[in-house]
Image (cartoon, rainbow, N blue to C red; front, side, top):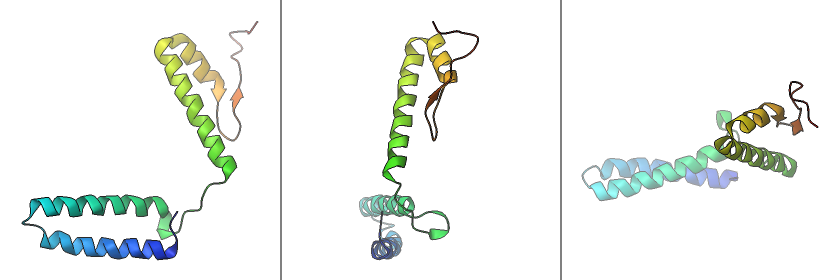
Length: 112
């Protein structure tokens, strides 16, 4: 998350780097360094700014936990799929993530 002052400073530095790009056209090493910094600042600014330049809000702790659990389940399912394709396919079709994590067994395969 970036505050308004930091975003303004990033934008100012990006403007300066664009001018440096023009000056560094003949110096390949300098141009590469300018380009690396420009790309890094651009990525940071894009991650902090949403649509139409609005500031992104930090996700709640509950949302971050939901995302972490979803990623962990997906990773586990992918590992199972790699070692046992049939089981991985079955689990992938029965385990659903989202606002709630749910396992709905397939009626065709009764659990005993």
